[in-house]
Length: 190
Image (cartoon, rainbow, N blue to C red):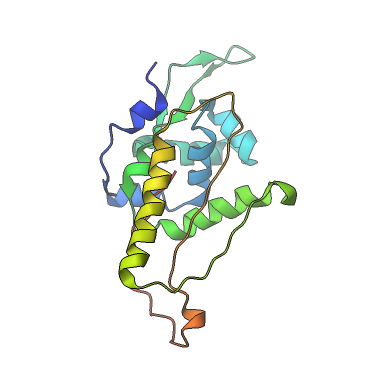
């Protein structure tokens, strides 16, 4: 079996196609990718984990399979002898840049975050005023740190954790009007 992190490294960062961007524009689909990172799950198991009707889950699973974000593994026999197909996240989303991911990332994060008890949450909110070159350095160091830990092999015996980082201009502190919506920025998913 291919190590999941080695499998992920096969992908080179690139812009999403239209179909890929649409697939990743759903917080629910991002949650499906998250729950299948470490353990392959059948459509029924995915539906149960996310509180969905299996037919609804299957629609989303097929979209993720068609775009290469989920892969179907060898079928297996379920409890009643029925043929079941387990699905596993490919890790492709980490290397796909999409301009429409912000809302779906926030939606997925909030759903996962709300399911965690307050004593297990670790929040930091920071306001910065740095010159452009130092802000660029800060952002690059964050990216490098996240990439370093992403590339480490998963220890399936360890507790899973989720990290969400957002860096944005703070227009509430500048007195300037918020910019009009324009070309969205690319985001990294997983």
